[in-house]
Amino acid sequence: MLRALAFALLAPIAAQAACPDTTVLACTVAGGTKVLEVCLAGSDVSYSFGPASGPAEMALATRLGPGVYSPSTDQGRYKYQGLRISNASHAYESWFAYDSLDPQAAVEAGVHVMDDDRVVETALCDPGSITFDFTGLGPATEATGYCWDDSSYDWAEVCD
Image 1: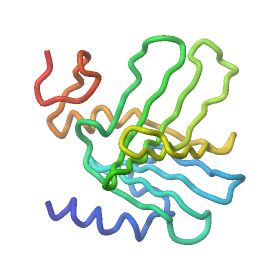
Image 2: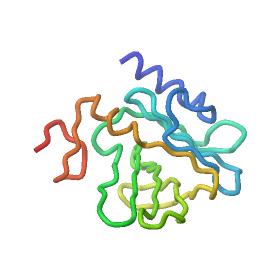
Image 3: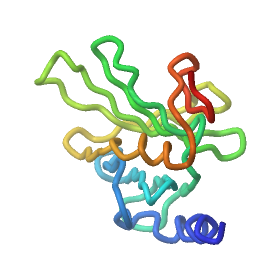
Image 4: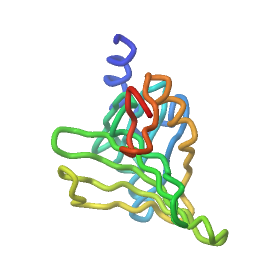
């Protein structure tokens, strides 16, 4: 509990700093004027977005669990993974996507700002600035006691 509280309190202070553990997604936005960064530390994830120099406009942190990380379902040619952190009625879904059948296709990434489940704004990462590694999110979510439930397409305490 104390560790989670300390993480939540420190996240806004270090919002534009390099991730302390694992960078899940990092890129520049709007021609390099903004920075998007998502970090993983144990089972906690943090999100920050704001000016390339200066404090973040938005910095949030949460523990992995249901509704937070959506792994690729490996159906179809386009792969998409997302990480959603909520703040009141808004959620910030950081994502990356690619065409699995076209090795020349560029990876795309960004953040969808959502009001309930409706996208109200999207910020796309600048091409060539994207760093991503979502591989640790599944094991980190499992470490919190959840398993992936294929029937609901979400994390659950008990899976079939």
